[in-house]
Amino acid sequence: MARSKEFEENAVLDKAMRLFWEQGYEKTSMTDLVERMGIHRRSLYDTFGDKHMLFLKAMDRFSEKINAELESGIKRSKTATEALQFIFGFMIDGQADSPSGCLMVNSAVELAVRDADVDAKLIQAFTIAEQQLKEIILWGQRDGEFTTDYHAGELAEYLHNVWVGLRAMARMSVAKEKLHRIAHTSMKLLER
Image (cartoon, rainbow, N blue to C red):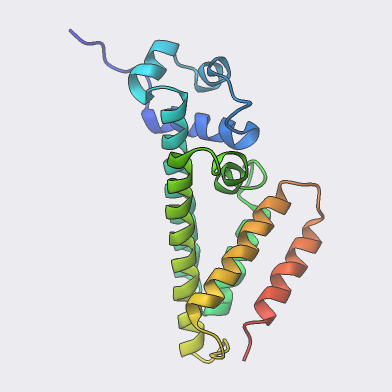
């Protein structure tokens, strides 16, 4: 008879996700993961596969959580400008007690060039982010908040590039005031 699991998968996956976010893929050992997740090594392998499979699942979990947070903030926004302000604030300030930076941006820098699976997940995540931005820009263009001199898709690509840069810089000891200034300047470029 198979033993039942003595842990909740998403709870331990969240712990692995946070460890990868803090340390990166290469620096995180299986011993680190077992200790942080609080499960036996055998349970880790049985449930999540090897370290690489666990990392890919952690990336999926990160995307799910961030996308849910962003969608919630966007839906609460009354204007497109407010929605973009929420996104930029979230990118710079993060969530309470979360590691700085972004698991996806960190992974792009560390692994994308040599890991096709990670690269594919990043392309998917970044495509979703650009689509979110495009929808907000279309909203702002429709309501007269944003310029129509540029195609919404092009502006979304530009803003996503700013978003990624802000997430990378947020991991450094750059003053948040500077990051907010960059976001503000980027938003001014959208004005009519």
